[in-house]
Amino acid sequence: MGEPQRRGGGGGGSGEDRISGLPDALLHEILVRLRSAAAAARTSVLSRRWRRVWAHLPELHLVAPPAAAPASFPATVDAALGGYLAPTLERLGVSHRTVQQGRDLRIPAGRIAPWLRFAAERVVGELYLYLCVPQTFYDFTPEVLGEEAVLELPVCQRAKRIELHLQYAYTTWLRPQASGGLFAALTSLKIDGYVHMQGSDLTALVSTQCPCLRDLDLFITLIAIFDVSTHSNSLRTLELKVLEIRHLEILAPSLEELVISNRPMEAQISAPKLVKVVWDDAYDPHLNRFVDVGRRLQLLRTSRQALSLAMQFDQVDELNLIVDLDFYGVLVLTNFITSFFLTKISDPLID
Image 1 (cartoon, rainbow, N blue to C red):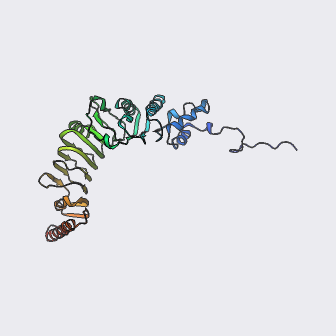
Image 2: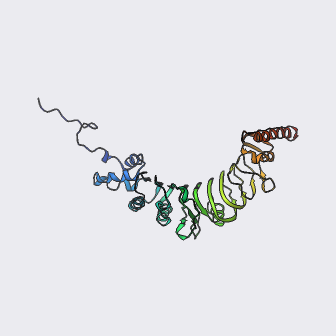
Image 3: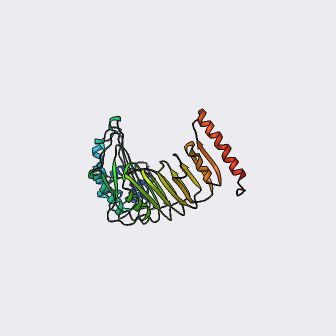
């Protein structure tokens, strides 16, 4: 009998390359699932067909292995961004976490800046930057913020979501692009870590440069004690942990959720659609004023330092109080519950 005819099924050692014949869009979908730009780029050695497939991926994930030499990662990012060929990028993620400690392991702001400029030119979806270097106890001495610590935030006109995490040993002065401009498509912004900003820059960024912003989450420190104004017709959720605010003004007609983790010296809040409030610090009704807000909250979460905040609203559907279960804490809670419910029951305006 003659040799059996070889069938062209998948596998079986036929030597036929069926994957390379797939359309680019499907190859991109396969490579994106690796969630590693480095792994995707290694496919370029397979054949001429694969040489530039990775360079047109809709997403780039650049993640440093924990044990990798910290000095080598910036060059890896530079090479990946320099070799990228598509005119737009849906998602750019850059993550560098070291297991070693010390400020000398930080990536300098001057090396990070070109990555943000690349994002400003190409990203039309999401930008994530996560940089983390642990600190030893003796490293917690304050640093003088000089020009070498300045990281310019360029205008990303087409990005819809931006998250910047600069943790622990990073002490960065984030400065918006001097020429101004609009983050015209941005709907979500999160800045978190050891980031410093000028109060005037923060006000301009939120109130004038992000006209479509819906969700804002900030954990930063102001360069100097300063007033901050947040005027936005689009904001729905606002979470603030901003140190060194003297006077905070919030004017947000569409705001529904507000989280304040560090009480400013003074605050004036106008948010008629507000339904959820988290206030994790002391509250003084004479200094922190809710001047135009809804009278009914779906949720109020606070501590015994701010129990009087509940009295600013006619109705609170869910009250989440954080108290110490010592004698004083229980006494304060008991007195509050008694006064709160007696006040609300006797109020003729409450159904």
